[in-house]
Amino acid sequence: MKILGIETSCDETAAAIVEDGSRIISNVVASQIDIHARYGGVVPEVASRQHLLTIIPVIQQATSGVSWQDIDGIAVTFGPGLAGSLLVGVNVAKGIALAKRIPIIGINHLEAHIYANWLDSSSHNEEGRVKFPCLCLVVSGGHSDLVLMKGHGQLEKLGRTRDDAAGEAFDKAARILGLGYPGGPAIEQAAHSGIPCLHLPRAWLKESNDFSFSGLKTALWHLVHKGDISVGDVAASFQLAIVDVLVDKTIEAAKQLKVEQILLSGGVAANKMLREHFIANSPMPVLIPPPQLCTDNAAMVAACGYYNFQSGKIIGYDLDVVPSLSFG
Ligand code: KG4
Ligand code: ZN
Image (tube, rainbow, N blue to C red):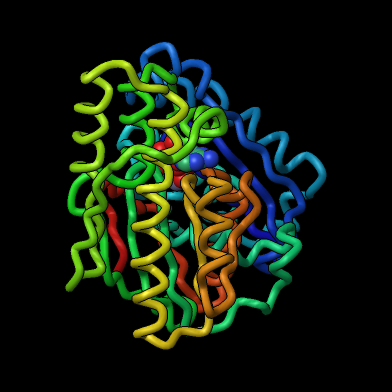
């Protein structure tokens, strides 16, 4: 079964074809990073206009080696994300579905991130290796969610961020440090030239599975405005503070829940230190997609679509965008 995935929730225009929920046949991502970098962050109006320009060429490229008759379904992200950006993907998907008579399904972008773990381009993660129940940490620019997954379509949100998401904290910290956008890769790069020797607070929120990163960001602001600091040391200390909290809280919850595995996903899961600390500290297997499948892409949307189609979830042409969509 071949699914065409379409993703336009933020600043990546993406289309992919995935077979049987795991084999990537094509995976095209047109990033708008260069366009938004000069503004220090994503400008929604600019993003939606850029999606309009690139969506058709991106889909043409992704589908070039496949006949439309062989595509069994179209999976498109309908939330959460920027309304104007989501609208482009959803309406193009509806247009193609109608013209080619292919069933369509709306996909939750956060659930799609988790399904990057099913894609078999990950060497440590052949299909079938995911075992339920598993605990999923989804860390992206807008979300830091802990989700218990008991089976396909059985997702229960256990924790979230109470303020900034992990990726958002990286982006804001990089801005304070004058390191540019997106902040995660910029901080990771700067951290190579420093050591994590500076004290920064960690919000443990002990009796809860929630996260909080805004206090850390404020502490960083004060540190920087005191002056006379090494950017490398601040970046390394900030990165370690985020990694410590994400790793400790997730592993603690996974032990209590007695899950089989931990699944990481979302753009922040591309962070090398986060990946290494999870693998070094977890008593249970940790699955992490390769970095290019952690950040936004449409292969994960198609993989998620496959499992939704399998369970008979098909929707009509009244599909609309839901910018504030959550789990459950
Ligand atoms: O999942 P994603 O591509 O888009 C959203 O759904 O938001 O995540 C983007 C976020 C950005 O905040 C970016 O700074 C962060 O992921 N990110 C990273 C790294 N690569 C991307 N954060 C830390 N380390 C990285 N290497
Ligand atoms: Zn994302």
